[in-house]
Amino acid sequence: MPALVLLGAQWGDEGKGKATDLLGGSVDYVVRYQGGNNAGHTVVVGDQKYALHLLPSGILSPGCTPVIGNGVVVDPAVLLSELSGLADRGVDTSKLLISGNAHLITPYHTTLDKVSERFLGKRKIGTTGRGIGPAYADKINRVGIRVQDLFDESILRQKVEAALDYKNQVLAKLYNRRAIAVDQVVEELLGYADRLGGYVADTTLLLNNAIDQGQVVLFEGGQGTLLDVDHGTYPFVTSSNPTAGGACTGTGVGPTKISRVIGILKAYTTRVGAGPFPTELLDEDGEKLRTIGGERGVTTGRDRRCGWFDAVIARYATRVNGLTDFFLTKLDVLTGWERIPVCVAYEIDGKRVEELPYSQTDFHHAKPIYETLPGWSEDITQAKTFDELPKNAQTYVQALEEMSGAPISAIGVGPGRDETIQINSFL
Image (tube, rainbow, N blue to C red; front, top):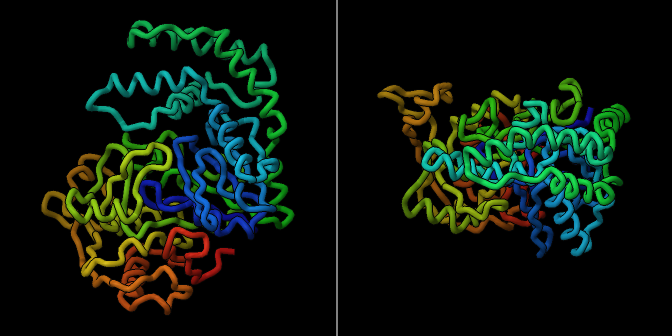
């Protein structure tokens, strides 16, 4: 059963877009199963760079059908803008399919997201302000609006009225903001119906049939394992499940149909937003990683926090996702360091801890315990096989593989589509 899940094994921004794009030419469907336009994927094709937010990376691969699953929250204005931008650059977007059960981000979701973050002040989560959390909250509270509602004005109006009865009270009385008019929201949402109608489908049925017929389906997660609302560094997380289980609930494909789960690991560690980060570097090394790695959020434009590789969270990702393989990215960024520290465990209250602590308090107080590996100075961007890497780079990759608990089957040695060493096939 050729169904694969590809997900971030850290705090996101690991290079999932490149990994998906690498496989895109060999798969029939690429499916986003959670998140919204808070997830940013960068794909470099030749001398062209593409920044994708809602769209699956497979949209850049001719012959591949990109799918937005039911677990995604969709801002229709952002989606249409992204489609238009790609079409202007000559990319065929006509094959896109969107689940009618995916939920919509409305204007009141983005308004509430921004004002609530400002209200929290120092306690803010560090959201992207794009309405993702409020849209997921409405979904769980059963007052959400789905893509299919765009095609029934009566149902759409009833749902918007029900949502705004409460939200306008919050906006006016808690945040001292002007109430949002029902008619304005309904009119805006109805305006998207004609432009999105041709993309909407029963994607659950489609994907299950495709797998049963032997076609290859790749499920693409946004963000990363440590941002999972259940398994991440709560409350500094996203509002959905980027972990492998989310691929099932976010698409309607059962777990017995998934044959491989691939975790994307950066050769060091980064995260965006607030929250604990044991290996974070607030020195020249951190700035060097940020500069060489181009560590700026695709969606937010914020500088990413940078630190050394953390084997503790890599092992955790292997465990909670059932990872079968790793794709190690950005190894080239580490070229030039004489010695490279790797976090192998934490010190918490004077004790050595080798697994991720379940307690939020303990994780906040975790101090990294490092082992130092020899670095390399040779340019590795032209390497096509593992044996062509400098010996110290080989040693580094082998050490990370042993510490992380799953085989490293591919290595990114540069940003380009072709700058990848394939050790084992994913298919």
